[in-house]
Amino acid sequence: MDKLDLKFYWSVFLRRLPYFLVVVALLSAIGLTVAMILPPVYRSSASMLVEPQQIPGDLAQSTVPVNPFEQVQIIEQRLMTRANLVALADRIGLYADQPELSAGARVGDMRERIEFLGFEPDVTRGPAVPGATIIGVAFNGPTPEYANKGANELVNLVLEENVKLRTSRADDTLQFFVSEVDRLQGELKRKSQEITDFKTGNFEALPDSLVARRNRQILEQERLLALEREESALRNQRATVVWVFERTGRSAAIAAMSPEEEQLEALKSELLQQSAIYAPGSPRIRMLTNQVAVLEKLVTEQQAARAVPDANGQPAAPASSLDLELAPIDARLEFIAQDKAAIEKALSDLDLSIQATPKNEMALAGLDRELANLNEQYNTAVASLGQAKVGERIEVLSKGERFSLIEQPTIPGSPVRPKRLLIASAGVVGGLGAGLGFVVLLEMLNRSIRRPLELSERLGIEPFATIPYIRTVGEARRKRSLVVLAIVLVAVAIPAALFAVHTFYLPLDLVFSELLAKIGFGSDVPS
Image (cartoon, rainbow, N blue to C red; front, side, top):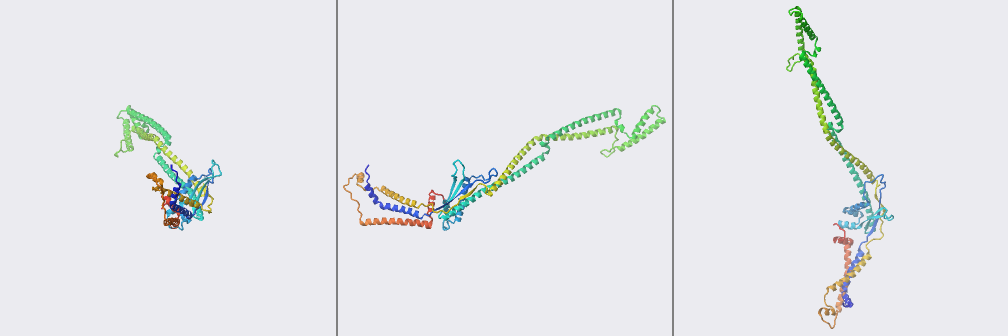
């Protein structure tokens, strides 16, 4: 490996020194200008304590079981919406002197200025001991007053959103259980009416009257047996009366004869006895015969007067003694037949109702279970409604878990950024590195032969001597003038251009934010 030719490289560097100086001057001017004209950013912050519920949980429980981490995430998402950020910027008056700034740029800048510091555990407690939860918010403003005002607005918004979040959830919970109780009341009324209608439509076949219907069935069967026995006895009695009448011509109904009929029977008996003693033409026999004829005519007239007309309105035949004796028996038999028919119908209805009772019992049990389930749900909803009312009252009176301000925002005494010395130093160091890199790049791209060694390596020629290029005084003066002019232009034009952009177009911090957003290294700024 050939020995490093430092003299040659130094000469090359001196030959490229104008380019080096221009690049160094360019980047240094940019760094120094940016460090000088970037607006100061003041930071004001506040701390809030997440206080636990003030009323013991075993006495009254809040209905908003939202942990502080979730609350902060919800509040942060609500506050960082476009509408809220625009309204916040208007209240602060941060862009009052920049009316030409678009709403998208304002929203993007506000998102860059707001910081949520998250949760910090209580440092006074051990790692295994739960401590207080602290949330912090900060606002970065162009002046101490804007920073303090923005931080105060953020604190107010966070506290308001916390109260709004908890009260709205408590109110939503209360409204839900109010509607649930009303719904279950309606369901209970409908189910009770359904059970009432079912019992009304099947009142003869309900399970609670099954024992009574079985007892009634037994009594009706006993009545039916008694009527059948009585019917059998009456039929036997009727048959006996008819048998006696057919053989004797008499019946037990004689005891119920009228006086004329009794006298007639007595005369007939006396006539029969006298006929055995006297001759048929004797005065005694003729007298008895005349008396019998007169009484028979009278008895016939009486029977005709007592006879009931038939269906055609004609007088019915006189009732005989047999008819008179059989009439009450037949009437009783007819009544027994009607009573038996009614009992048999009642037994049939009872049998159908007893057979339908198990099915009705199953249906009624299902309805009762549904009613019991609804009643249980209703009782649970009523209990939950009571808890919801207590929880809503706790949140309205701010007795539940809440955020309280423990460290108010203060007016900052010094800006937190930009780090001007760091930016200026980065510009100078970056300019030196970029200038040196630019010189190296030019030499790497230059493939011409400039040393005797390169003649020998590339062409195989050994030179006797080398004569360097000698510039005239005019050439040297023109080159120095161009370099000085370029450096001056860079040192003046670059700061002037950056200052013009910052003053008349858009602040440099917003320009950088938009550039980073467009190339994908920053937050999106809606237009």
